[in-house]
Length: 310
Ligand code: TXA
Ligand code: MG
Image (cartoon, rainbow, N blue to C red; front, side, top):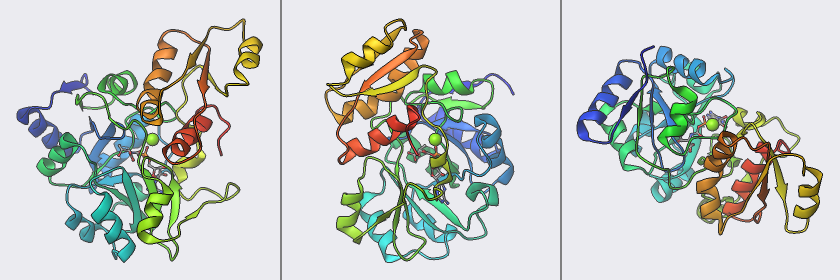
């Protein structure tokens, strides 16, 4: 593999990126949530390269990205009313829908499952890349598996340089944590991953959504792995527990992360994890947020990073 090219967002560079995708190569690109590692979703050999580059477990399926809702009909067996409603309201946006797949979707995209996850990102560069390549693009977060998701091009470079063909540098991601994933392939919709769009918001549109019970095997296979982890140990603290925790670890090099609001926390958290590692901190204390709305999705990532998840 040649050295990884850094592309900018001008028309010519985006055309080059689209061509690389069509040639079966891997190109990382920005979305509003996190950076994605893109490959042609209909090319199983290109898809296979993603698992190698990321060190991703083979049983963890990928999200297919689209620029036009019409494309959905070519990829899934049926589009239920619930999906139509959610697509109308939340696409483009940080919402991924799981539906029954057609055979055109290679088996390594869905990791052998009969379903496929679909999302239309709300990011001008991602949409332009999808339009120009004119193929659906699979894109997991563009990090080495288990590491914090990348929220700028530099993070992708740190993890994947020399392993992928190119990175489109589109600056910082505005949301900072991955999309909400909801399974609509069965009778009752099921929330598989929390994100910026909350369960309550979705329920106002399509009615009751169930959540997976903690003891069940996660239906989104990705949710069972340790995730989002910096090298340092992450410890969640409250206003009351901070002093005690700091005392416990006083012989270690530690940093405390606090944020003004959930939006800022989501946007900065993964970057701050990576920065703390670069500065050699052994312990990262993070002040907890509420477990309501967006805060719930952030706490979910934080618990996984501190390995209290699942
Ligand atoms: O915001 C995002 O969703 C980002 C950007 C790049 O779009 N992508 C992302 O992809 O987070 P990834 O691969 O890191 O996470 C995909 C999640 C995993 O938990 C995976 O198990 C689940 O979606 N998933 C994918 N296809 C599925 C399917 N057919 N059934 C159930 N879960 C699925
Ligand atoms: Mg990921």
